[in-house]
Amino acid sequence: MNDQAIASREDPRDIETEAAAQLERLRGVLAAAVWVGQHPTVREVYIAAAPDVSVPDLKETIRAVLRDNGLVCPPDAIHIGVLDAAPESGAGREPPAEPARPASAAEPAPASAAGPGGPAPEPPAEEAEVPPPWHGRFLILSALEVRRAGNEVTCRVQLLRVGEPLTGEATEIDTPAGRARAGARAVLRAVSGAGAGTALSLEGAAVLDLFNRKYVAVSVEAATARRTTLLSGLVPIDRSIEDAACLATLGAIERWLAW
Image (cartoon, rainbow, N blue to C red; front, side):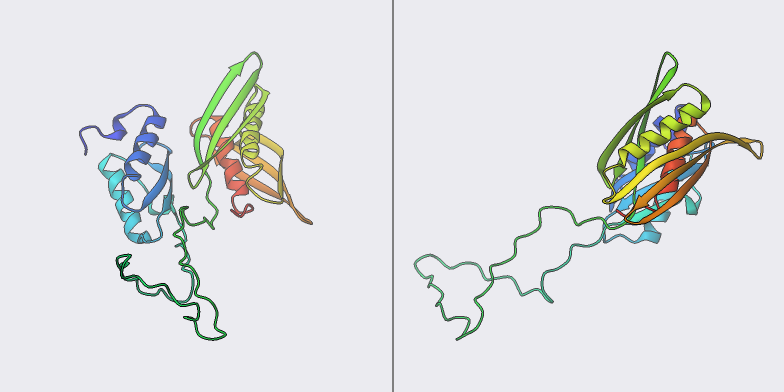
């Protein structure tokens, strides 16, 4: 185990932050988020990976890194989203052009170089300066802030959609059910502009006792075009009501939103 093993930290947030930072140093990892359940077991790992990575090899490497730091990660807890490779223009690539000759020896290309009636030669395509688009569903809860004042609780969340931050905030009455609603509504406000033509609204949130454990259950109304449906999420309370409500909401909507 490393001398400064992340598992030795007491704050779960510190463990998760340090673990994510170590995973982001791996080749091919663009972004990472780690959620620890009952220490030392890792509940979930989310990875945004480059197009050229081997997913099975990357999973083994991730488990090895977490294991070296005192964390136990089940194989099914690792979720990897791979970016699409940038599409090539045309069926094939022509060989690179020869270096330009000195100006004194250069000759202007004749206007008829393409042949009579043939199309004019196309200018070389410029290299894209932006990363390839993301075509998967990928939302990460990267930060959660809870503030209390008087009889109210305010939740502020930050989500990551492959590196793009989305923020949302909601205030509710400071009761168990109100805390759950605040977390759920904050997530829904964060994603309100992320899905084109999609509307999401919280139908309800509740704290339940099931199998000798407490859970947060959420129900979300979703509408797009002429189709409506109810989406549900259920997550055990491992850390706080607000935390579980955020995760339950993400679990409810992730299969509905197409990114």
